[in-house]
Length: 143
Image (cartoon, rainbow, N blue to C red):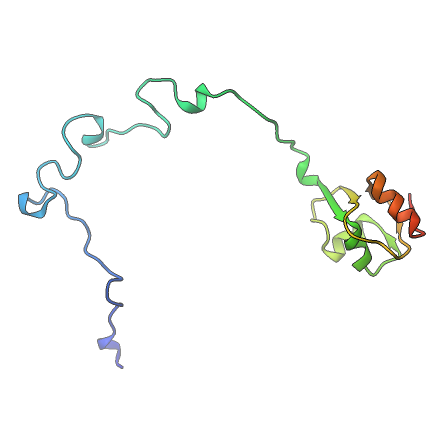
């Protein structure tokens, strides 16, 4: 193989569509734009969602829902995550270093998912009622 013999794979390249080049091309005269109207003209188009003056769908539908701006600062971990963690005292810093919560997390809560058999002391980390009971049953504590 030599550099002057290299070609792209068959079917990977195709000719660019040449519009307005006569009747024989299949895209002559109106160049595939149909007849008359705003979309047939040069520079004639409308913004996304425009429906010809009719009230657009995104304005017809009611506003719904709410997304909390503080959501990115909240995180949760499971009892199974605590079981795998090699620390007796668990703080926000240790969870971030272990990669269990994101760097932006400010509020962390333990949820009851999985089993916990070792003693763990939580500092500045919240827990649901069921998770708290499971932690205390294993001999751990929350502060």
